[in-house]
Length: 347
Ligand code: 3HC
Image (cartoon, rainbow, N blue to C red; front, side, top):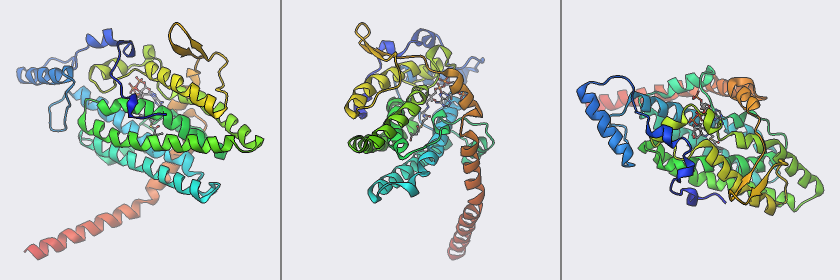
């Protein structure tokens, strides 16, 4: 299963772009003498694997990269509430309903920690929501697919949360302090999400033929999307080299994808499902699994707004935002009244 034990030291082969990364300089523009000294301090701290905190000087490009990644991550968490939230009213038992409500609520909490972490970089929540609602911000491709049966909820827990943990555990060692600290708690909760999904599937697999077929069908539909979730191949990932040079990303997209495949194959065996890839096989030389070709055209179409549920997901978020306006107005009016009362009392 996925635990903090995946937080292993980086290996040379986790960093296929290491050569390119080593030659990168944090800021290309000419710097003043004092900026050059600040830049040197920043580089030295990154090289020593130290943490950067909100009050520290940082290059503008580092700040921008973090705002981009953390806000996309936050959006993914809150959009990720939708495909599963869809099943709360149809959960097959009180126990499953309680677990699902807790899980969906956790995702909302993850979004809030992450928006808060991004705010420490000088962006505002309104700016981030505006980018999401107007379609300018990305969020994870995986949440643009429909959840057709109850088995999808189990498979999302097992595979989607499993892939998310694999990607997120190295982020607990991200060079930016607030992001790294938020990720520690997020990963603990994601671990519960992954386990509850796997356990729900184990129960279904010991049920009827129809239930087993439902699980296999869900695995067939989600497997390839989960592999794509790790992002484009390293050679086509424009942000990886710099992200790794700055200690934001610790393990490359392809290396994480490989770790996920290797961890998931034995779990599928225990569960009794087939992973839908005829090319999936153990490679004795590499001591890793080989796997088939991912459909990157489909991935990019989804990332660029043309997946099966993009419009529905964004529409739901915008509707929730608009319908929640009166709550935000009321909370602000209440806060203003309280402040006025405190000022009167103090006068
Ligand atoms: N979905 C949507 N966009 C994706 C993507 C995906 N699965 N994978 C990559 N992209 C985008 C990148 O954001 C980038 O776009 P941009 O330059 O316009 O911002 C572009 O594709 C190129 O990709 P890169 O590999 O160069 O980008 P990164 O270096 O940022 O790596 C990442 C992408 C691995 C997703 C990295 O940003 C990351 O680790 N982010 C934090 C984790 C995260 O956001 N996870 C999302 C899932 S959260 C979740 O699943 C919730 C859980 O509860 C289930």
